[in-house]
Amino acid sequence: MNQFPNLIQFFLLVLPQVDDLPPGAETTSVVPLNHKKYLAFAVDQTRDQVESIFKVLKPDIVFYDFWFWIPDLARQIGIHPIFYVVVSSMSMALNTKKLTKEMTGEKVMELPPGYPSSTVKLKAEEAAAMLFEAEDFGSQLSFRDRIRKRPCLPETRTQQLDDKWVNWLSQFEPGSVVFCSFGSQCVLQKDEFQELVLGFELSGLPFLVALKPPQGCSTVEEALPAGFQERVKGRGLVSGGWVPQEQLLHHPNIGCFVNHCGYGTMWEFLLSDCQIVLIPEIPDQILNTRHKVAGFS
Image 1: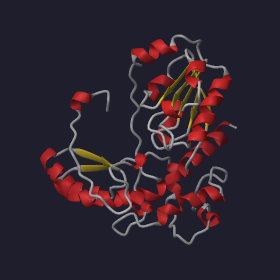
Image 2: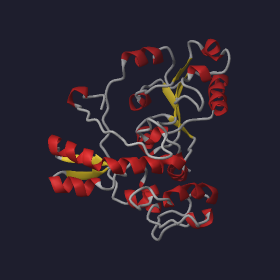
Image 3: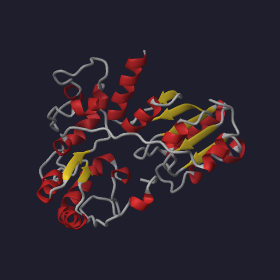
Image 4: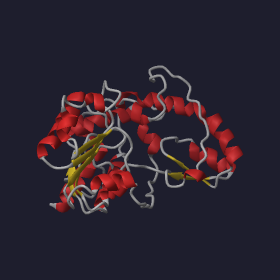
């Protein structure tokens, strides 16, 4: 989106307040996993607003994710709906199984017929984390019912890296910088955050860390260990904002990428020359990681 800002027009959607949804929450990145269903409850109450926007805007296509009612609404107005999903086909394959709240982790981890691998799968304790998908996510539909469509892959675009990043990276030798990013969904505990950045400090290598502020902190700066910034000045940078990840991965001085193995990130690092360290957090990232390990072992 930031490549063509002059072509972007924003339309306001007002999410109604629903019970148990944190005030002001509008995206899954700010809602805990066990509260995401409440965001779906609110989203389903915006259909009239979306319909009004469609009738005014008259777009040719609309991209959607778990807004399951978008296709029917779009077709009524003559718009082509395209389902856009940011998890891997492996995760989508596991979504074909019907889940119930009574299932055990062992039952959830059973692979569906035709699944192509016996090793790229979840362990029982990891699979149990998927049971939230069996809950009501609004309109008497489970999470899986809302997303059970065919995924599509976008074409990756590249652009030049901003001068501020080029200037900072140019201080270091080719392949010497460690880059770390865990995506927009991951929020670490403060002690986890501090252990991670201290590890980069102890590596002795130049590093760039792009993470959201840890839980209980409003900025990454306030979460840093005492004296950290002074000790790593000139070779270490910790950012709490957005960074041009795809472009950074193609800079010759970035030599290692520590990441969560999210689906979009996975494709970006596969197209780079970086060494990869994977630290997955949620089930689809775990599957992506096992697939990569199996493929390169």
